[in-house]
Length: 201
Image (tube, rainbow, N blue to C red; front, side, top):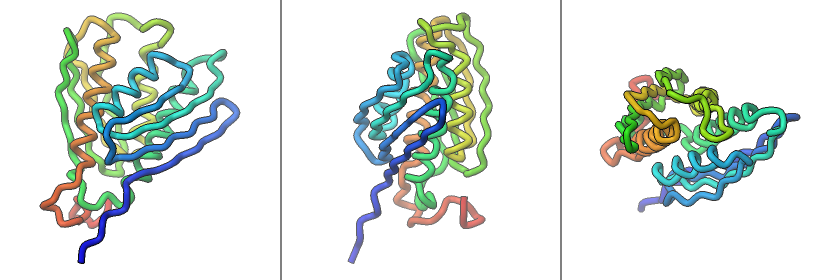
């Protein structure tokens, strides 16, 4: 007799004096998304992330955008990281590692991830412009740091080259999506084991 594995999903709500965020997140989805943060370019990146990872994501964020975009972007990273970590559970059977080279027009990003529960971020990105519309591109690093710390990811991001900051950032988000999609996929050869000789991540 076989039993189906529990759905890998999570619901996270986080409220501070700066932001209020709610996320419904499913790892084994179809890439369906419904995202609203009040920051249109950031919404576009999160939608691309969900679509290319085949994660289902419903996310609502309200923040003090009149002060700055930073609190909203960083706190969304915290919530998404917590959602991924919760949805993974003990991470039994996952492949654990993923890497993706992602071209986007004239830009190319390399992303590698280890779902290790030992968070670390290496971010080697130099952009020719510090803005996409009203979006400060330095916030991408803040988002990825918060996301990796809360999800327990060893995450390495390198922009190999690129001229358009829009294309470069989109390559990063799509590369992250594809790398994570590979890393959290269930390996049928693993027999449901935790992917570590220690027996735990």
